[in-house]
Image (cartoon, rainbow, N blue to C red; front, side, top):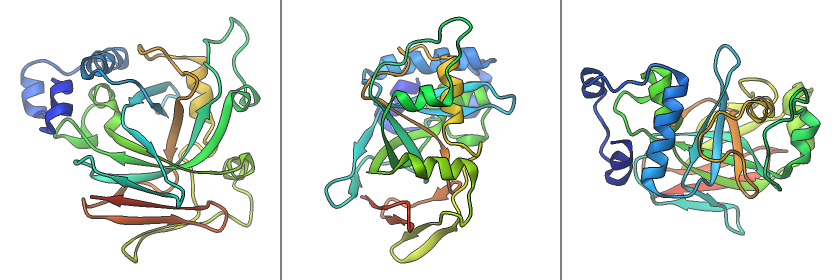
Length: 251
């Protein structure tokens, strides 16, 4: 049903899913449903949306639609259905990430060593279920944590990631505007402080059922600016003195 909703663009009714007893009861069940739906859709995993639950458990959702900016750091998104965006940092892997060896958990430096490049990114948010993000977490997981698609932006340095983690002064700044109207302006803040923390947690507990983190894939770990609602005709510019610039045109 989730795969069909992806293909048709018609959201499933939360009320129907509840009445039919189709709400997964655990994170594990949500991850299993997510994997089954992804396989039914039949597209390769381009990247991963990683997060931490309130108890610190790593969770993940596959990103199936991803594109990169062009030579002018602009990308055009034609897939309909996006409701919002989040400006993020994403990490592209230069090798497969195997499960950790017993008694040897991955460290921050281990994670850095498996990253080939770091980028500014924009996640587009969309839902296959009409309850949006207010639905139970296991069902939200089954719906790929609300991922619609992703745009990989220009490269940024590890130094910027370290500054985000330490929140050094003077703070970094970030601005998002849509056709000249400011949508966000302020210091970027990651939910866990360090954008690498959800990645490290997932590397140490890979709970997906789709093959894990692979060479050439990327991972994104949380918004630097919260959730910004958008319209289908948005023309977004993201910029900051040290966070580069990218443009997103939604048609």
